Image 1: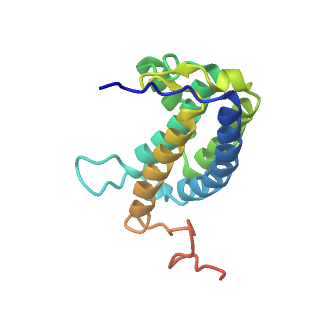
Image 2: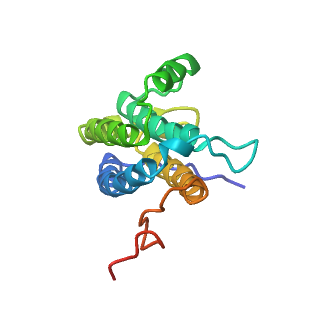
Image 3: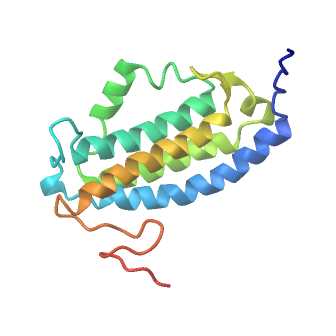
Length: 178
């Protein structure tokens, strides 16, 4: 039995995937920003279970890790951005309230996304990280990670006294326009 080898993606594929996902990530960032901003500061220590992160910890993890993903992709290296000591220092410097964290997130996410936009097709095809994927392959992981934690955080909101924003359609607190 012969096994086929998988062909490396073309540079055109990498650039096209990047362009498609960058547009999608811009839209997702706006929604994520609204969910982060919706965490009530007075009850940011809410956690649904003793083993869960608090709302504040989850919002900070979501914001910081999204930026780290973008920096790792653009820098073609996750070792530095996901280094535990570097992450700990970065987390300590995050804004302390939800509105400021949401603004920080938008500013830094946009800057990181712009770095990814400027990557050459050859850079996008550079294999990096623990999963040994082309750099462009981590854009989908970033999206999935972000949507996953945003869903967790949105499920905390009402329980901690916040309002759930419109995410992919209206919510009780923000009815859809359609």
